[in-house]
Length: 185
Image (cartoon, rainbow, N blue to C red; front, side):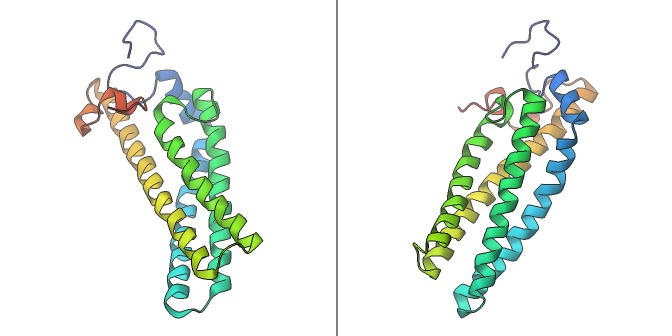
């Protein structure tokens, strides 16, 4: 990473450039994401409970299936608005530098949820197989949500580091510049 005199370059240990941070703080899509993420999580918890009830008792199949459809629709909503957020903040709809790996994994989450919808509407799977697919989709969702929670923590560390002038603020969490930039080690 460059630490050149360019005001928009990212200093080592920082998650956003000054301009990206300004755009992030000014866009309404930041608030939209902040509202949709916990809503989606609550829908996930309710749906997960309904799936478990169905798998244990064989009851409430329709409610369990519908809950996964609703969870999938909330996922689509957060993916679409998240893409708009990335466009406004970073200039691209997906795979922006700081969120590259989160977006890559989001594609798997989206694919599994979409496969559930396809299987449900084509009746390609039995009810138990359908619920197994939903659980696989939910497992990937939990991992992906964890990625974003971690990134939120890094953003807070980034903000603290900027306020105190410490360029190693984010690194203090044990994260290297390559991980912050979306690269791998």
